[in-house]
Amino acid sequence: DKFAIMSRIARECGMKGLSFDFECYKHPFFEPRLYLQKGYSYEDICRKMRQRGREFSSAIFKEYPHQTFFCFFWLSIGLNHTPPGTKYALFYSFLNGFYDKVPPEATIIDGNEFNGYQANWREDFLALMHSETRKRYLSFLDSCNQEKFFRQTQIAPAFYLDSYLCPELCAVEKTFHKTLPVGTKNLVDHLHR
Image 1: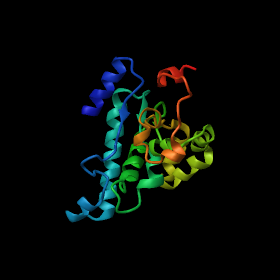
Image 2: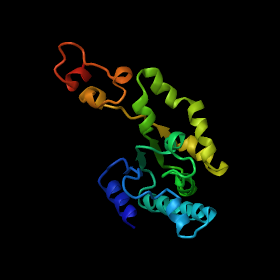
Image 3: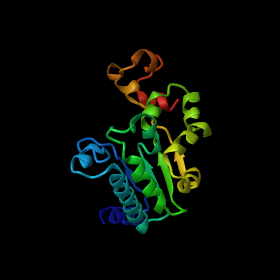
Image 4: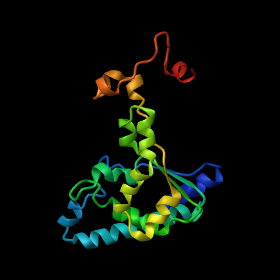
């Protein structure tokens, strides 16, 4: 119900849609270990996750079917973080349930956060949006949801501004750090040039 309320508020306020961050900061919701320890089978856990995905999708789109649903990660999480036993291993069961109920007028934006942060050049960002990259995601989706993915999901890679604002925190500074041009007072000045 809370997600339906948030969608209704977004629609009534003229917002494009909701932004959803499903990263497991404290509670590994998509990790099977906790459920397996309670005696559930992996198959039962996956079925329940898919049900939860359907319920979530139904709730957010019930009040605002035309919304743009923004995610920092979406299918892109699977390229690095979903092998069995990891904290996102159940995410694709949830995601397939989500696509089971997504209405045709909705748009999903995958922020491709991790891979966007690794991109250094324009070509890197274009490669993230290339159809071959998107085809790799199909292995995570049931065949009944693949057309919805191609029709309704867009990739909008994130930018890693820490390399501009806090270069000392950038872990891969030598290959990723970009310096501001000489005479540039700040990032805003640089971006307006």
